[in-house]
Length: 152
Image 1: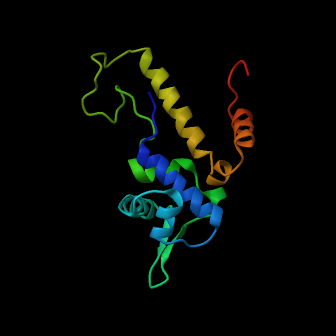
Image 2: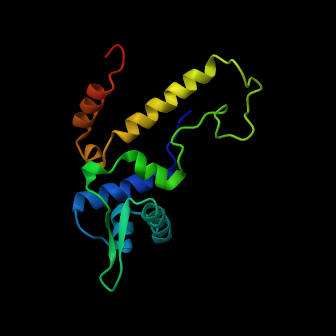
Image 3: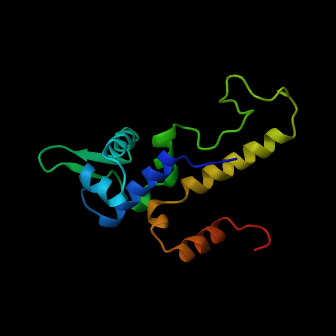
């Protein structure tokens, strides 16, 4: 099952907070606003900075700002900054050195996993932080328009 880790979810929340205030925030301000421990926020911001999602402003009045506008920052870029390149993994993917599955050739399940992984990556790549700031109904309608589910 595809799961978003706690660290990924916390990182998305931090980025959404920076997008909402649209100005520089300190580590402690972000920690307080999101009710997270400062060491956790420091670790996540370091990963987000290395991933190019946030910029650190040094100095006495330093803090963190988004590296790009919320419209140009994808949910996928935030998640990749925390967890690496793969957004969706499955047991028989090439990313696993030793697949959990004994069927390494001609398996009908592998294309299903690959297709699902590609769709998850596509949705996250095309979902911006600005999209996440919409009200729930508007966000849901937007997703249904972009990626309609059968029967809805």
